[in-house]
Length: 575
Image (cartoon, rainbow, N blue to C red; front, side):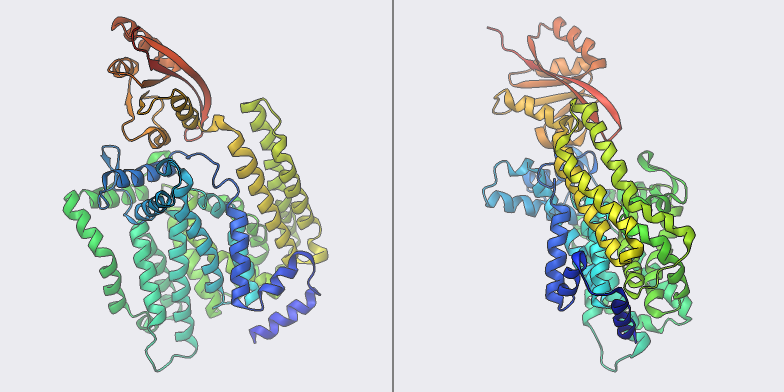
């Protein structure tokens, strides 16, 4: 029945042309679909991937901890300099360390401080999540709608960010989509035509993906699975389908995969890992705004319209029809994937944009289902929201020259062609919606997203070095020609990227301590903020330190949203 409706809706849209043609080509086979999705994802994620410097603070912390594993050869314990880092499990650190070791084996120069090597697991996770979204969607919709859903995820703002950052969330998304896609197949099979034989393939995939998610980010993936399963059982008034998940052997298999490292870290830390990860990290986020990231309920709903753009533009039009179809098993499963976990995230005090990323594949599938069936709401009051395809590119197009003028005294012409192309694609998506339909409008929005990625990540960020002060500091130190430079920074600038770029031995002190540090030997540098310069100079004069000003850096610390003024001093040997 579904395929007949799909065919009728496609005939109503008319022959494919322009951007819609690749969908027809790819929808003929799963291999073609995978090729199209992988190519689109790489085009979306690679601009700026190799050129953007280490980003503070999470990315640099993860990368530095992985680097220390390689330096120490200790692959069980997790440390950032001398401090333990027990907020997250080991998974992402192993993946990043493996990527860097592979880079060293291939002869990549300075692999351990080459940030894009640490980003490779995130890139692989993001591309994998796009492909698995297509695979998961096939259980609920036809190939064409599954392609739309996966493309929607690949073009989303939030996944574009996470694919370029060396942290856990893109890899976790891959594990979550795999687990939920497997559970969706099990649920639909149990509802429609239970087989007499015992099917182990999907349960094995489900529990293996859950184990991977636990090793990446702890019990978060369990929340998605358990809340969805409980919601479905309550709505269906039956728990019998849960037996098809093979909970006992599946749970044993998951424990077999995750317990060895947890046992090893328990023996190593004496319980400190569980106190820090569960007590100080997870539970603290539930009841307080950790690291000043508190926000009221509704935060994720408000942010959704930007983080899931361009697909979010159609969410308002799709929502009424989705609600009408909520009793259909496929729609019910997708809503159970989204709603309970979304409510939990809105209630948790600590809020960061990427927390809801594992719910976006289900959102994409629901919207794609409505687009492919031609059943989007016709409510006139929702139609002005279609301007969102043009508004976001317009805001970014205005912001780019402002940033360039602010930090480089340059209009940033290098980014204009890409921003202009995004504006045009977004304008056509908006204005031609009634002419060409939702599918082609969405594809034009996706094209706008690709051009925005090129404008922001490829043309703008690498051309604005002031946004990455640690890179400027590292360049100044390296240009001094020392074979083994040592750096101390005053407490006003303690960003992890500084440690990643200049070595685990980087130290932090006040102005007095900085002068005393570089007095201990040659090739020592002090990074002194403006407020500490006077105490540094006074102490240097008092101890007879000979020093030279290497460079003064005026930058902007994006992690705290403030400008910084830093001076690099170097010890000078007496003649």
